[in-house]
Length: 403
Ligand code: DI6
Ligand code: FE
Image 1 (tube, rainbow, N blue to C red):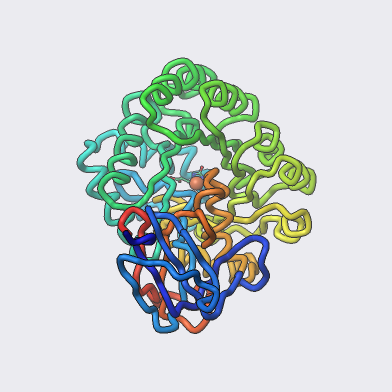
Image 2: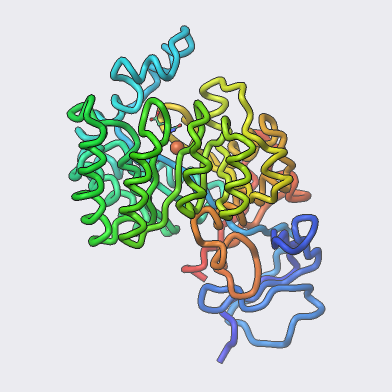
């Protein structure tokens, strides 16, 4: 009987291991896969002799860990192109939100859509990420804002996971905006989330994590804390949209609750970075939102680097602030706007994105025992992955479940 299901030979491998320099390159490598996991990886001339059901030479092509988009809102109804136009004519994101547009206009369209309709508009967004080499996507709720519609969104996310062939992690983001029926009564909405929605979501296993939006146009730190305490009591990990438009102490709040990640971080202070360093939270940077909102305040990149806070990059795909359903474009923007190196960009969409989802032990690098989600590329070096704009270089995405 064969020991391995698949043996890839003659590969140039960017393992992206945390403990190896320069992309963790193995220039003349082989990878053996068994039961969907990497059973052996290393230089070809060190490969033990073992039988494989299938052997495939990659003829010197590059392979990397499959990409991971660890922060998206890609399930939503309607379109916000009109607001995009309004913003270009001078209206601010906050002004539009306060006038009942913004997130709330997507809430109306999402509430009006059926499960089937939401699935049908979201699937092409998932497929466009897969076409770029993405094998794990996080999808947030947050446009339902009541028990029925938040659960509808999470159901769509689970369904996308079952039908797309890749791994989808779903996140409950009920504390995204105050729903219209709770205008002026945000605390009551928080109570609804904590007393009704979260227990039901946890019991039905519909979410892998819980997120919240801590911002002056959304929820205060004490309101987020109440949601986080409830989530943690129910055994769900937490993460936070933090300090995107102002320094609301979001990074500190996320760190205090042991959050997997704090995301955005444009206005995070030095104290916030320190708190993240101590807690081990991943910094998820979202350059698509930075670009779309025309932000000028950069996240504290040097501070994050010098404190060894892991930096992930995600698309933040959403109709309002980041209409970018592309992790490759997010990597490209992170290099141009945030001056991340190409290696940081690739690590941010593989190793660190896996950590941001609490999946660092399972995927995100090519190492023994990890999931065999592998991207094969037509490139001269992995630094090209943050360099080209709009050039699809994926040759093939190998998925662990299908090897
Ligand atoms: N921050 C964002 O950038 C998105 N959500 C959030 O909390 C915006 C979502 C939207 O405008 O629809
Ligand atoms: Fe977001």
